[in-house]
Image (cartoon, rainbow, N blue to C red; front, side):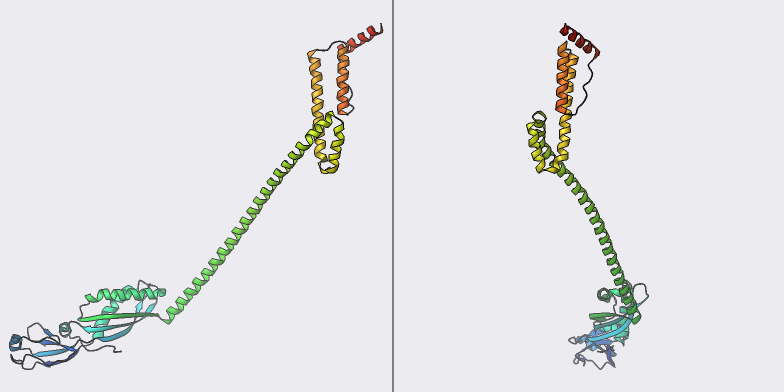
Length: 342
């Protein structure tokens, strides 16, 4: 691979050109640039020839043979990365061919790479500073695009094609990049650990909350179930207890049921006491109504009161003392006894 080349193959004094000999000797891979003092340069491509007038009156003094074939050139350079702390080791290769022989001759370009390389490096340095060490592939693509965009403006007389740019890192930059990667991986590991710890704590807290919620729900369900059981028992025992209160034969039925379900004893005792209280209140209320209404007189009051109180004591079976009669009733009773004796 050629590193560079001289695009001007040779220069020579112009031979005598006449009207009848207008052709010049030339190489197939070269263009001719004709020089005449005080006149613009004339370019003849391989298939071109001078007109009769140019041949007769041109009076060209020097002929330049310019190489127009395609050459592969390459060079190495260092391009700064973002922050200018490190550089990209850069290898550039491309194909090059003269597309304006007159410009080559006019500017005396004798080294193609020496002409092209400074322009390419200037363009690449502006672009490379936009990328970090870890963005090599992105930087390569951007560098190629920038040169392909800017090369038309170089106006060097060369055509640049098939550009390839390869970026590598210097040793210090590779060590630095490796350290960054290691730190990044370590940070990622720590981040994952922290996230896992957070997730575990969150799950544990959620588990505790769910456990508490489940306990509360279970307690409510148990309480609700117990209420339903008690209601069923109450609905079952209440008719028996009520009948036992008025019909002593049902006491045996109640005893038989409790013998099979001894755990219900406490509930039934409570119901018995409740029924007893209801019966007691009913009899007392009836007695009070009868007395307050003054519907009984004389010995009827005494006999009725005694009968009701006796029934109350008998039904309750608690051996309560009979209340004393009012003084007015006591006097009436005494009078009734005396009349009876008389």
